[in-house]
Length: 276
Image 1 (cartoon, rainbow, N blue to C red):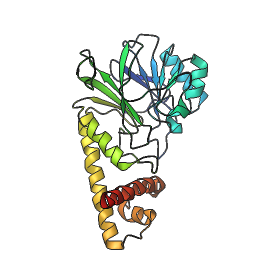
Image 2: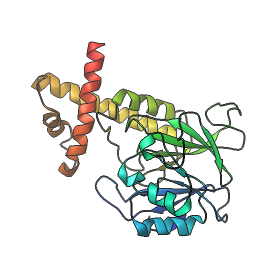
Image 3: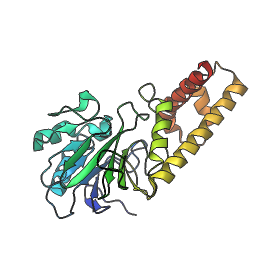
Image 4: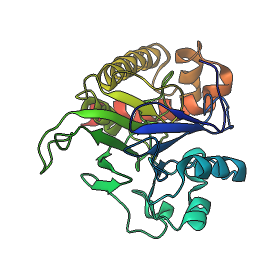
């Protein structure tokens, strides 16, 4: 699929995406800014992850959205959240986030919240691990709430995953803010969403959140086994970067600093298992 930056692409009946022109080793093709509404022709949309603080990107988002009643953040990393304050200024829409530092004109959101805007119902799942403030937004079907909330247990049709599940490759556990045990628990929760579309923060959409989450879990277990073996061979005094050079030798060295965060998270996880 060819990339079209700063243009609306309708992905599902409820969700379209505007791809920010900020590609990099960490952002893949760029940041996906998602627009949610019940009808593609509605000139109103919820904006999820406004992306970088780039006026051209925000102008593209506003042109595609029409009016904006609500702005949501999956987490506070700049490539997702930097543009939120400016979009709030341009639209007056509240910015809802788990971390108070990224909220504007709102008390924020947390696990279990259910939002209704632009004709769409959005269920909030706390999915810490990539960062402590990571959220996923589940779009339930017509029968009720995907998470078994007070409206029933209707099937989900899509989940916006931020950086918890990417459209390509794996994500970093941003130690010390990100905690591997939390991340594994979040993946196990997402694994329950069988045949539910993944609308990620970076990369292409995926067809099955459950399959993607199980693949991520298997990958993490493989990496943990590799780290255990490296420590067994090299001793407990190896630094995180020593481990990176051995375990992530197949990864582009430009990504090694990010891999070092994940290794630090892995080492902390293994220590907690040993000491527990």
